[in-house]
Figure 1 (cartoon, helix red, strand yellow):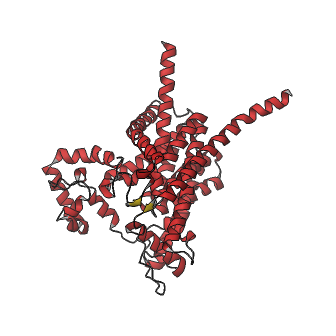
Figure 2: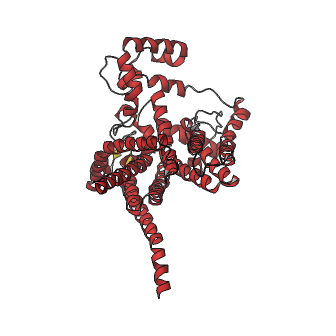
Amino acid sequence: MQHTSVNNSSRLPGLLVFLVIVVVFASAFLLRIDFFRSSEVNHPFRSDALEYFSAAYNFKFHGVYSTALPKAAVSPAPDASRSPGYPLFLAALISTTDTPAGFERKVRFFQALIGSFSAVLVAWLVVQQLSLLYGLAAGIIVAIAPQLMVFESYMLTETLYTFELLVGVFAILWALKRQGGWAAILAGAWLGWISLTRPSAMLLPPFMVVGVCLLLWRSANPPSRKTAVFLLIGWLAVVSLFFVRNAVTLGNPFPESRRGWESIVQGSYPGLSYEGSGIYGYPYRLDPLYQRMADDKDFALQELKQRFLRHPARYLNWYLWGKIYESNKWSMKAEGAGDIYIYPFKTSAFEQQELFILLKLVSKYMHWPMMVLVVVAVGLWTYRLCTRQIDEAGFPLLSLLVLVVLYHLAQNVVFFPIARYTVPLRPEYVVLSLLAVDWITRWLQAKKEAG
């Protein structure tokens, strides 16, 4: 009897973890199915979504990777204007019997599933790091996040990229723990898929790998050089496939794209408002010099220099603080339909059903306190780094999360800073904020005991 009792008590934590995972997944998936049934996007095949769909359709039925509008009897000219990760995901879902509406429903269902697994990954990550209660809280916060649910209804990269980032963090931690060649190569291959989902994420995996290895170099159990090298080999093996395809098909492994430079120019307007217009959002549409700046880099740099010299305080504030603030706002009014929407909805449960209205309100009131806690977590990471407390439990995870956030915020300082681009960081923000809450709680408890 005593032996059975010990066995039962040892199984209890595992059963509780399983219960937390089940509760989080069920909550996330049921909410998403309810939202899916009661909400409808207005013209889902538009703008970026149309290009992703076109690339998927042309690849699936013509064997050509091209964002040209699909035509059943005409094979389009190949291009490389969009990264292939998300279109390949869509291509896996397309069938010859799909109607546009049927295909959109299929995509929304699978993205709802992916979003539910993202909530589970966050819960599992926090359970392993903190406790069951924290893990449950983290999973539920991600499960009810309105932006994540809304973006699962769009044919855009955000949902897939959100999931990939979380798995990428797990993959690197797994490779560092295993310290083996094949584990690192497999983890690196997943990181390569992350880079191919978003062009802005091309350098994120090497930044994460090199960054975390350097940060842990003087720890009691530093990562081996072999692990870092194999992680990068796995990453390069995957991303190079697209470069080879471009070289063979287009004659250039790195075809020039205007998108990056255009994004830099579009993000140069302080407050996302053109000088003196008083209009918020799409500032470049009002600038008579925008098209020339987008076409001529030398002219653009000279013009931006003159604007900076005319209003130095305004531009310094914009690039040192304003762009980070803008990219982490709750509302997406600057480059979308406003509030939690990029594309407008015909009907949305977040505007019509009491439960979803309440969930949006709760998430909205949590938004800025969570952002403050993220800053606290970054401060905690900096303190541990400066005081060489790198052997404390959780430092590798904390470092990876901070590196992911810093990479994306740095990009927003350079490029067009809109809230859409930080949607995939919401789960990382949740984990960082709860790490900060745990640290504050323990600090207050220690201070109370000492007093």
